[in-house]
Image 1 (cartoon, helix red, strand yellow):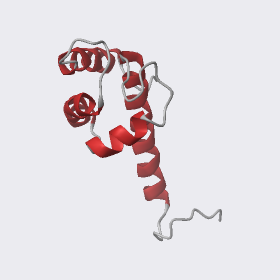
Image 2 (image 1 turned 180 degrees about the vertical axis):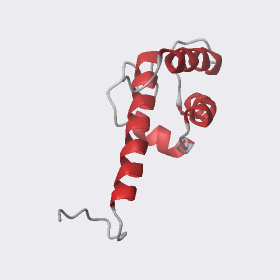
Image 3 (image 1 turned 30 degrees about the vertical axis):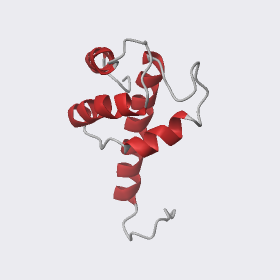
Length: 104
């Protein structure tokens, strides 16, 4: 099963181009935030803050510092979904809320 369905990818692409207000083919932090708010609601995760997005953009290698292309956005959203699923599974397995999973 893919992390993002074809429909989800199509929705992200549509949202990307709608968010690319300057038509550059790249999104900056404010454009990403606007796009992620819509995608997060549809995909069931909480979008990060604009400040967190900006910090992340400068940590990852991109063609344009502080900006990202469509392919990078799709990858980023897929990773956010994986992280959300992992946190949910960990929380469910952490029955004593210790933050540690023990083998019994």
